[in-house]
Structure formats: C-alpha cells, structure tokens
Amino acid sequence: QVQLVESGGGLVQPGGSLRLSCALSGDILSNWNMGWYRQTPEKQRDLVATVTTARTTNYADSVKGRFTISRDNAKNTIYLQMNNLKPEDTAVYYCNAPSRNWPWGQGTQVTVSS
Image (cartoon, rainbow, N blue to C red; front, top):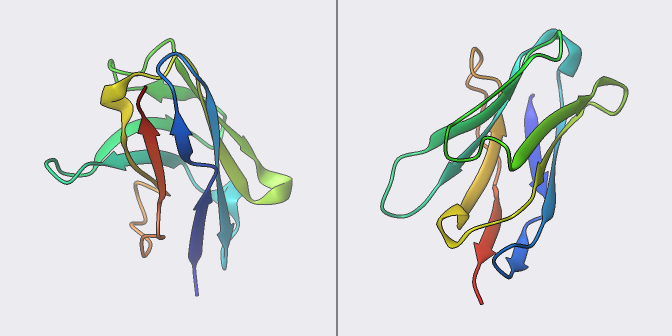
C-alpha cells in the first residue's frame, strides 16, 4: 500500500525559507516522475514543481527561481527547497506522482506571514 508523508512546513516571514520533505513507502521512488502540489481553501490543487526520473525539473511560473525540487532515491524521498517566500505561497503542500495519482498524504501547511 502506497503512502506519502509530507513534512517540513511551518510559519515563516516573507523572504524566509523552508525545506519540505516527502517520504514514499510502498513503491520505489526511482521508477516515477514526482511532483509537489499546493492547495488553498479557495483554489484547486495546483502542480508547482516536477522532477523526472532523469532529474529534469520544471516549475510553475509563480515559483520559478525561488523553489528547487530534488530527489534522493536511496531515501525514497523528494524535497522542495523554498526561498524568498511570499504570502501568496501560503498553502497546504502535497507530493504525488503525476502519472500515478496515489492516495494523497495529509500535506504540510506553509504559512508566510509577518
């Protein structure tokens, strides 16, 4: 049974940084392209960053140049380094494999506020 567990969120001031982690169990991370998503109560869940099995990365325009997605296949974990955070980055962040749509984890709350 596949399980995704996100962690690393918190409250941070504008301009600050956070590093999110997503641990996969029940499958082999190296087999899959992975992504980070975020959702606010007012919006649908949006894909903000992806990393392929070949480690090619892609980003939504809103986070390009500020966020970095990476993967550690040995740890079955992906990461999202978020720098220069803005209030509009406030959301619950989730990970998943875009082609698999595994059951969603609980997500991790990121709040950017002064």
